[in-house]
Image 1 (cartoon, rainbow, N blue to C red):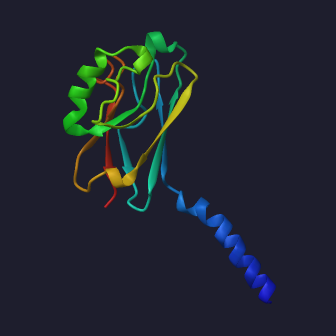
Image 2: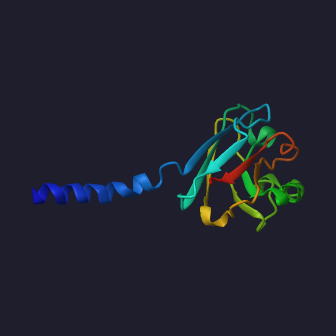
Image 3: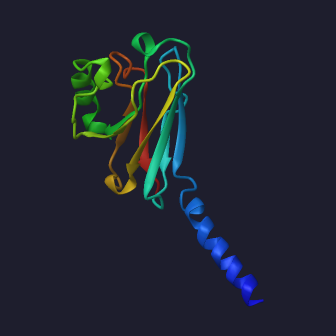
Length: 150
């Protein structure tokens, strides 16, 4: 009986990291029509880290119709997008070292995917957060909100 209990405790300890990450991810798709398939993401407060995976479901290459996923405070979105428009594709259309960006994926083309992970502690309860694509001209259509669950 003691061995069975010990085995169950050991199994629970090994499996714990899998449970700890449950619900701490989101998947979002982008297409050749400049659209995300989601307009909002809610992050559970219980997560230490949160990962967003972006998948480009279109066929066009990144130079023609590339997309990324960028997270910032809603107040900083327009300025980040304006500064990013001056950056290059090599910089993922983001100003290098921009401290206003909380997390971002790289620019991807049709059939590609990429992920971004950030610390949930970086989010403040009650603050408005935005996600958007910083490819020039895309943020007008490709944006949404991210919030910390209550």
